[in-house]
Image (cartoon, rainbow, N blue to C red; front, side, top):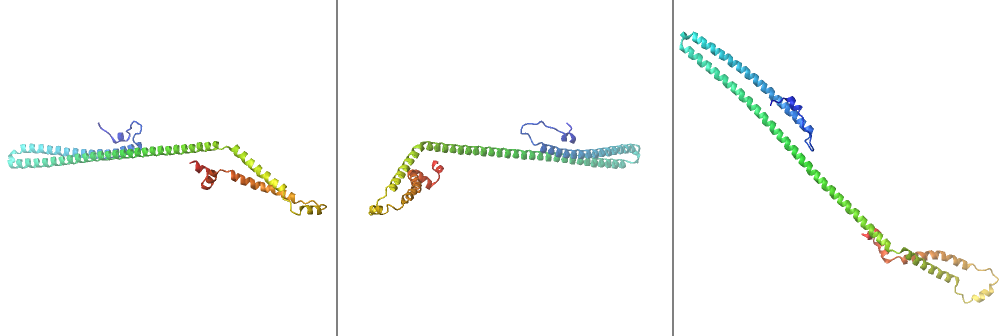
Length: 265
């Protein structure tokens, strides 16, 4: 089948999944068509040379025929001239045949070399493309593995967060807030009542009677009211003290050692 460079350039292929790169295939076809065109030009030149040689051979054969005719008409000139002409013609024919054979052999060698080089380039290109495909497949598998590892880490982190949240909810549910508030309020109320009783019933000094008798006409002392103003600040201190006393020891250790969420782990 005769193939022209134009047919090589315009050759099309069916598309398939994960097929070859079209740009590389078309580039290779363009290069191959150029090499094929060069080879065809060289073959054309060789054919022209061969035709020229054949024409020369035909001319020589015509000369030989004319010589034979001349020799036949000039047999009387002597056998030596006939032998010399025959030898010269044969020698010339032999040289011409050798030259023609050399030209043909050279053309065959060049054509074979060009075909071998084209095959080698084609194999190298195919191997390179196969290596690239294998590298891409390896890279794809590594990316898939990395994605699976990342998803596994994300799932593990999410599960840990859910477990921590569950433990936190369980600890919060185990704490009886209402009972602790009632206890703290009761302690604060008891302490405040006790302080108020101490303020309302101070100890009388030894000369309380005489002093009271002497100063019964004097204005009423307001020291009791000043004392009664102090329990408000004392009550705040008592509330803070009771709140710190009511806090469980375990929670105090948590505040010292770390946050509440650190203890959940």
